[in-house]
Amino acid sequence: MFRTLYGRLMAVFLAVLLMAMGGLSFLLYQRIRDDKIDARLDELTMQARDVAFLAGQRSVFGSAQTDRYLLWKSQEIMEDFGASLLIVDRYRNVIPISDTQQEDDELTLAAALTLLNEVLQGREIRAPLVSATTGNPIFIVGVPYIQDGLVLGAVFIHTNEQSIETSYREILAETLRAVLMAMSIGAFLILLASSYMTRPLRQMAVAAERFSHGDFKQRVEVTGQDEVGRLAESFNSMADDLERLEQTRRDFVANVSHELRSPLTSMQGFINGILDGTVPEGEREHYLNIVLDETRRLNKLITTLLDLSHIENGKTPLSKTRFDINEMICRVLVRQESVLTERSIDVQMDFEHETCYVNADADRIEQVLVNLLDNAIKYGGEHGCITLKTKTASDGVHISVSDTGPGIPEADLPFVFERFYKVDKAHTTGKGTGLGLAIVKSIIEQHGHSIRAFSTQGEGARFEFTLDRG
Ligand code: ADP
Image (cartoon, rainbow, N blue to C red):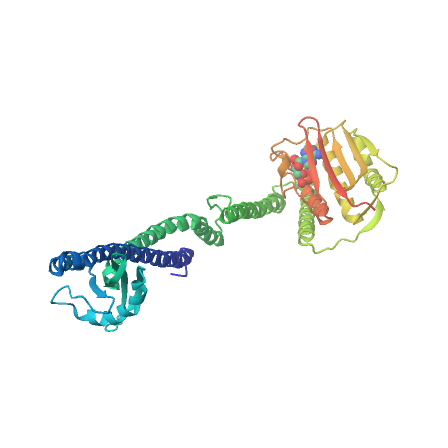
């Protein structure tokens, strides 16, 4: 039972309920019992007063007449209250009411006589006693009987505890019934509540089981903002991440296979053609050069993949130095000068200061600039303009590379940094591998900074990243 959350909740609930109800019932029982005893003693006192009145009239109306009344009264008290009557005069003589005076009267007499003096002073008394014969508690009330202002004796009525108890036992039984009912209803409600509260946990267990088999589709229901609700939310967001990662992994394998297979197939075709003579003698050199280009491309692709994997695994640590990023930008531009001229691309350098020192790994940042400039040239189109901007802000140095090309559609913007992501999937063969921006992002993140892409379609694209000030 204690293995499940429901079982534990239930055990705690029942223990608390039992303690609370037990305590409450005990107090209630005591209270009702005291009230009942008080009420019964009040009634017995009233009866004793009636008897005292009759006993006081004894000398006026003659004892035979009064004794008949007293006998009747005594029987009535016995029937109605299960109590016995005892009349003692001031000389400690018991006034006999019937021939069949009860046996234990004699014994109660001794107890009653201990109270006699108090009653003879004109006071009414009530007291708990212990029966000398049975040892059970007895309740006794004593009332003086008076004639002409003189206390002639005392009327005692006594009853045992059982005759009072029977009435409050019923109340106890009622209370127990109420406790049992409350416990059953409570147990049912807690079953519902715990099953509702633990549903997400059970779903999580099922989902986790599926995750272990590679199925990341399962999500759990978020039932509220409590701890379990928040856990369910975190679980779902973890599941989203896992699903995305799994998808990326699958895409990556598919992309790598595709990127490797296409050049290999074309190379195989050319070599077969050369070997079986389909390619004429004079054209062989041309096709062999194509094969050589493809092998170079393949080599570059594999080197890039290895680079990316090294950067992402953190295998090659950064060697940070202080250098002028403006000067590095100029150097990278000079290397691309011929392509820029060939494509009639105008370059603008918008440097806030003549020098701008950063603290970073120079080789890696050069690779970032090369990749971004490459893309601006490749995708910015001919006769465009590329702007390289640096400025210093409180969070570091901001560097941006923008072009005036066709830009990147809004729907593709969030994905351009993913490995193998190409916006124009159909026409980019030969243009790139879709790994350039993934490398750029990894390098910048390795530096503890971020890179963002902005673009309005038709108005060019802008890539902006930050670095530590040097
Ligand atoms: P690739 O090797 O294909 O250039 P990248 O990771 O560098 O791969 O870029 C990913 C994709 O983002 C590119 O295929 C291209 O569609 C888009 N892209 C990158 N830079 C630009 C840019 N300056 N203008 C328009 N599209 C761009």
